[in-house]
Length: 212
Image (tube, rainbow, N blue to C red; front, side, top):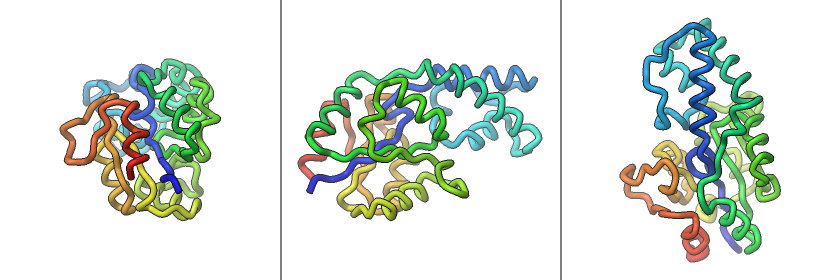
């Protein structure tokens, strides 16, 4: 039986930086705040409220909630359309499905823009399951919890399931669930982020998972 594959989204399958960073800039401008950190791609990945707290330099809900609503309004309606697929990813997904691999997504991105992005890129048919923290009720607090829920719901063997991501957080979430992890370095490239097995390009993925 072939292993099942769960993908992170931002930085792994897609370059969402232009739309997300534009959304943050627009949110801070419209709310009259100045970000405490530069709006660069390395802030992308954690859940929205966590990132906004870092950018705003506060955990005050009175500051963060308006910022979150302003970001969502911009990104969900227009910003997501700036999303780009990393080179070779679409072909990789098609090939994996053609060879009967079962694919899923587990992302910190909210489910609404996630589904819109998949439709925008024409990828909806590739994934049996699409999961985000806010799919669950109540929303989950971490990617590690989300992977645990996916394993339980789909009755997956963690040692026969790969999680593909691009950040230390992704590796830690996989390790917390005894899953096998592969680091995608074709996107934002955290190639020095640890001793995990690395995928230099989407072309390498099928060969690696087929050999395990």
